[in-house]
Image (cartoon, rainbow, N blue to C red):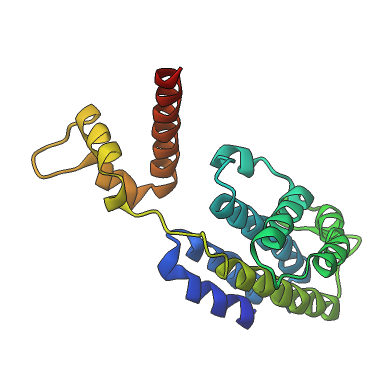
Length: 215
């Protein structure tokens, strides 16, 4: 999974939580020869997770909980649609045709997966190592292609703590801590997803108030 690992490392300085996907890539590489079905199942998880990450960082009209509820096919299809709009060099038709083939990963995971479904040993059906190597190679190429396209989207910008002083002050006033401690900074550092969700609620409330004032 060298291609995917390389682009993930390039994106790490710009996205707080993208290093999480190294865990899944490591799981794939650890099992590709000894546990083919775990490797294949992990490829399915990688595509689903990366697609949700791409959606979250491009489509700001959707919040974390909505995107988290997307199933495998819907998540990848939505990510492809967004990349098609944002990156003029992206090849959506080929990607959608490849997606049809990758849909079978869900079926393989249901029939043979060892992690999501507990199995009675010995399993009646198990993927061959050569098939596992093929799926992992294909997954590495396609995942890195999606991430490379994602990296070129110009409007992607990492959430900066210093850009939201009004919101930070509101959080700190509502959640006072001991002297020299900041609740907003602690939330930003320790749970950036929760910080961003609260920030979006704050922005939505302000926009609603502004519309009511204009009326």
